[in-house]
Image (cartoon, rainbow, N blue to C red; front, side):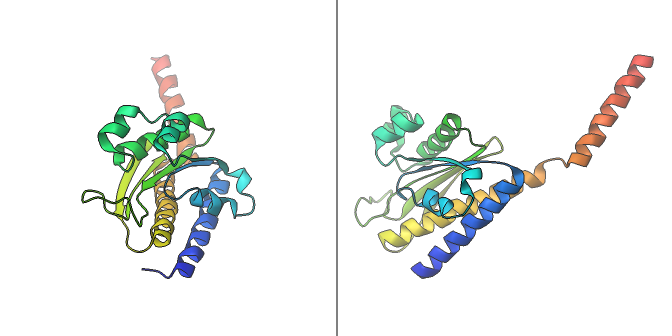
Amino acid sequence: MLLYSDQVLLIEALATQLGALLTDQDKKIVTAESCTGGWVSQAITQVAGSSGWFDRAYISYSNQAKRDMLGVKVRTLNKYGAVSRAVVEEMAAGALKKSGADFSVAISGIAGPDGGTDDKPVGTVWLAWHVGGQLDASLAVLPGSRRDVRAAAVTLALQGLLVRIRRWLAEQPSPAALSTAAQKKELTQLLDDSE
């Protein structure tokens, strides 16, 4: 486990990398946070020029806020609880739908020191990312104090965004390939029309 000061430096570096990537691609991000209380968005807005790639943040700490702000369904909260894959997926999807962003990240967890159960101990954090039309979620059980759990969750959120956006970009056809594909399609249509 990283020292807290090292974790903070890592968070700053990840937010800076994310900003460079999103700026380069002319894309925007939206966040939906619960247990991190806006820390992801705070890390993002520490980066100069973030207004060009950060759309907005939703801090939905209570279940009511998750419903009102992000459209999380009552039945989802009742069936799975606020700290669950289903809820963070609805948070990520809701944030993206309500914003003008291209990508989203959502976090809900139990930072402690209280609130844990046998099924969901302190340190349980669910994260979800909506990137390139794909919704992906991940569970982490993080060690340490409340501060440590929250810092690790912010780190995972930013790392997850970088990995997923880079993967999505790698899967996109290059402009040259698109041009070639368009030319082939046009040529095929011309040949078909001439028959």
